[in-house]
Image 1 (tube, rainbow, N blue to C red):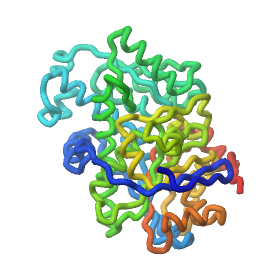
Image 2 (spheres, helix red, strand yellow):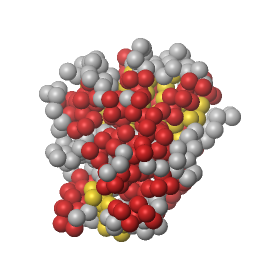
Image 3 (tube, rainbow, N blue to C red):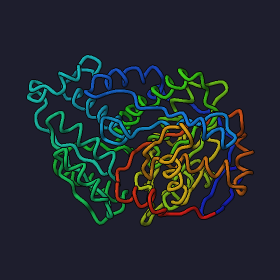
Image 4 (cartoon, one colour):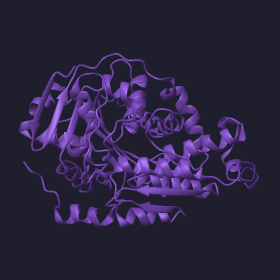
Length: 407
């Protein structure tokens, strides 16, 4: 049950005492080994940087701050391709009747496999990054993709998906309704849905997508160990919760004692995990409406049921945050202190650093900082899940101060 709820500057937070819950083998370190073995075969694979913001941590009175920078991932500016590529490879291997562990990437993209599998069409709904990852994977496999996007889709994101040969349908719907439309069209046309959330009768592909994200998680653990650092606080953003479920489900199995504190972050207008946790009845609760936010990759109103038990039980804090928090994070990451490295972080990627800024520097958030026991001995980790996928808005935020701090 929730312990405390406070609101400030259109931001809310909710504290709870984490509970023990069963952790799925699908998100275990053992499962990550197979996922990484696949991704390492992809041309251009290399671990993305874990940026150590040492000067920033010192200035903020913290032990350490680390940011996993996903902007260079396969040249696609986002982590999402990890899930889409792994799920699509699993789907093709299912049609071949062979386990992915016995099929190399070179075989997957070969003419022989294309002949055996035949022509298939992959469909999904996306705000941008997931759809680009699906289109990229389909292009390499010589398959078709149809990508549905909600209203207000950024032209640069539409163009980046079309550049991979996908058919893009920009709808007049919000994200959740775009998923429903994509499902109807897929069923009518015999396409394969590759969606990063689950529903009754559709769980296998979303599970594969969550497993795909384990490569990012396992890289982060390796990089923290190389830095001789142990995370005390892990900040992770939630849209439908697939990423958050994968991150928490994995890190809770790697770091068992002491277990890090997990902090969930969502946009104020699309905080379905927050709403579900606040209800206190153990069930998920949808958020409806326009879901309007600059954090479009997080503009989702329905929680992924595959993640819900993890997200219900293991976080110690849920936050619902105004757009200025993400914008502040973007500006801070782009303008580092002294010899800290800059990070190009998009709207959905920078919210973690933005929340850290509030906790470190805003007196109104001191109570939460103390409750989370964040201080000079803390090692904070967050995930910059995308680069500047909307370059026009990125410049307006960084150059011209769009979405200013409201304190």
